[in-house]
Amino acid sequence: MNYIEEQIISIGKIRIENHLTNIGIEMVKKEIIKGLYAPEKYISSKFFYNETGSKLFEQITQLDEYYPTRTEKSILSTFVNDADIDFQNVSIIELGSGDSSKIKLLLKQISPVQLKSIRYFPVDISQSTILKSSLELIKEFDLKSITGIVADFILQLKVLPKTGRRLFCFFGSTIGNLTKTEQHAFISALGDEMQSGDGFLLGMDRVKDISVLENAYNDKKGVTAAFNKNILNVVNTLCDANFNTDDFEHLAFYNKAENRIEMYLKALKEMDITINSVFDTIHLNKGEKIHTENSHKFTDKDVKAIEEYGNFNLKNIFTDKNKWFNLLYFTKK
Ligand SMILES: C[S@@+](CC[C@H](N)C(=O)[O-])C[C@H]1O[C@@H](n2cnc3c(N)ncnc32)[C@H](O)[C@@H]1O
Image 1 (tube, rainbow, N blue to C red):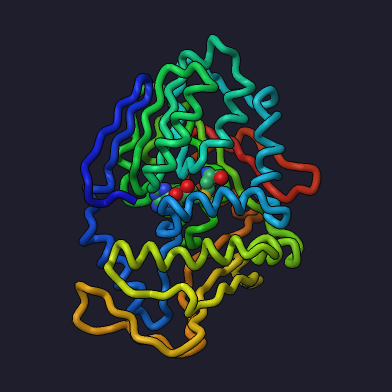
Image 2: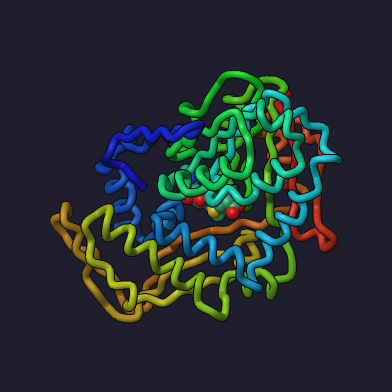
């Protein structure tokens, strides 16, 4: 998360642009401090993804309990034949691209001639992840180019490339990290950015048995707990704060009324946290929680709402044998 250093990296067919400096570190500090002073404390889940956080997330995706990645990948590895998508000369823009392992499954199903005509734009808040995954991807696929966009896709949709026919991809059910209101605002803003004929591939985790859901976010090895606690290290770095991760415990449970997993860090003792640029300390009582993530699960009604908010046509719904996950293909009207 490089909010400070302006940088363009250029290596062969790869170019990486950092747009986070246009947001700037002062704005980020304000956003985090506002959440920590709120009556119900929160930190946005986008702050999970420093280098360590991105690595921990990759480990989560390989856990036995964490069914979403496996399930979405099983759909992604075979869907292309059944989807009516023209890949010739398309610009693929992947929001929250992470390790780019999902786009690889899609690219594996495309002919070498078409691959050569494709421009790939991974968009992520984590610059280290974009660089690593782009270097890996170009070794495996002879694409026309890779342009990594280090940006906040909520605040900076406007920096996405506008030329040519575009296929937007948003995998991993990352949309579920937004509140319902934010989801609708985001989809509507994305729809406004898109032109008629542009496509949108969206991965969505579905409502299912509560024990399956709760196990996925409470793994036995404690990787999700480590991932959750690491957000405090990110806050320490960005805000010059002094959280100690050992003073917190990981908490994740399903909120049935909201159809979402909620993740928190619960204070194991009373404490005062210092933030260098803030005059006052932040006080936490023993047992007080900091909300770090929502992971909404979706129903058919939600799919309809996305189609309407984006002004999209829903072309295909791909799913797995358990109907646990949906890969949706929309086009812009
Ligand atoms: C849940 S992970 C999913 C990663 C990958 N798409 C997958 O399906 O495995 C979310 C990804 O989105 C990125 N991300 C989260 N919030 C973001 C934001 N506001 N702007 C840009 N990237 C963001 C994270 O760095 C991370 O790589």
